[in-house]
Image (cartoon, rainbow, N blue to C red; front, top):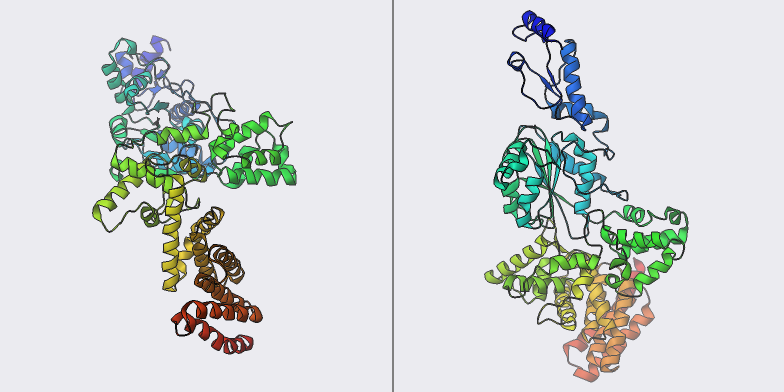
Amino acid sequence: MAPFEVYVAIFHDPSADDRKLIPIVHTPCELPDEIAIRQCIDFSDTHGDPLSYEFRLQQLVADLDPSRERPADFELWVGQYESEESEAVPPVRALPLGSVMPLRANPHFVGREDELQELERHLRAGSTTAIGQVAAATGLGGIGKTQLAVEYAHRYGRRYAGGVFWLDMQDSEAIPSQVARCGGPEGMDLQAFERLSLKEQLGHVKRKWERAIPRLLIFDNVDDSNVVNEWRPVTGGCRVLITSRRTDWPSGLGIEEVRLSTLPREKAIELLCKGRPEALEDEEESKAANAICKTLGDLPLAVALAGAYLEAYRHDVTLPQYLEELQAQPVLENPTLVDFVQDPSPTDHVQSVAATFETSYRRLDPGDATDLLAMKLFHLASHFAPVSMRRDLLFASAGLDPEVEDERRLAAGAVERLTRLGLIEEEAEGRLLLHRLLGEFARNHSAPGQGEEEAWETVAGTIGQFAFQENESGLPATLARELVHLRRLAAEAEKREWEKAGTLLNSLGFHLRAVAEFRGAQECYERALRMAEAAYGEDHPTVAIRVNNLGLVLHDLGDLKAARECFERALRIDEQAYGAEHPEVATDVNNLETWPKSVMMNHFL
């Protein structure tokens, strides 16, 4: 605008109320005094940021046309502007100018729509002038925490007009240089920034982050609350997204946690078959894909590595053949999950499932009492079934008594260490969960002074005692929830030909009969009987117990002749072992004497 026109506009509107003169700033500069008093529209921070540019443009249009409503709050305007896609996850788009994001969006990303939307709800709540919200994506190694943060940045990052800034917080000594980088030429490109000392650069960046303009800071690989406290802005429009294996953040930090679980099966299959989608059209291939994902526990890292192998050998290896390969050896030793993929991952993380777990496990110090117990509990937990377990049963397997205060505190500290390292998950009600692949990893890492055979026997003994006590109570509900563990330990004991296998099977049969699963109870009692006959001979009192129990369930099933034969055999064995006046003999006699009445009653019913 020519100086003459400027002076005329100022003359007609000296107070700037009518907006006769609207300064527009394209590049940061010092405005002349006669213009500085007027409200300018600053486009200097919108280059490369379409959303911010559109916001400023709407302000300009409203100034030129007073009939239009002038937007004032950027975040509120963004919410209105994008209302049509508020429920849907937006597509990948360019990040605002000045962002520091070293990782690209992953073209193979699947699922996690709910988690992305949950992060958005946590991070975008409130106004831009409030202290920024903090959200944490948490979970075990290989679950996809970093990948989720990368995806969030590339899909929602354009809503943060001040930029997106990625910081790897794993090495505390490297954090200052990463923060300083955000203000340099690769980031916000602050004026004369490179001439400042590191301390001055950090101060400059922090002051920028404390402005009202919305920015997204991503703190990747954090497990120390002090790091979060030190580097998060104390005010302004910044939002902080944390990725961490830790799930026990202090409530005072105000962190909203989004805990990641394994992929839903259909999404795991989709990821597995990204490179060969035609496989899903074949029934046999599709069935094998489901079995592969189940074997891998739907862990995103494992499924992605398996998918990369299947894509590379799409003309040479069928999915059923790959399933056979996985089942032929321990899963974590399969080359496809260890060292097949040599290319860098989308998140720059190691391309090995076992190595990912090893990174966490190595942080346990066997010289520390709490860490030593954590190693022991980790190993023992792997001998339970790969579903949630009662913590008191795990503690009992380690010989701990929760009634003793010191032991209770030590156990709680050990569990905290495992959860913080992402080696075990703690559910809301205190139950513990070990992923099936972590279970395989744990079984290969015995704690000092605790062998593999000893661990199996210890856990089997704990579960066996618990099952016996619950059966004695006559209330099956509590044992019903732990039944999967009893089944696993009974099967393992039978495979290893332990003497206690029969006891475990007998307890399992007792429970199944109590809940009217008579066929299952019959099978357990028959297996327990065969083991007792092989171990003690056909005329041992233990055999009599197993025969008697089998007779009871045969009676329930209506096989009355076979039931009577069992009761008669039990009576003969006990009379020979104890004599005619023994209580065990009385039990056998009672079963035979009440048998006809029971038959008539059952027949009548």
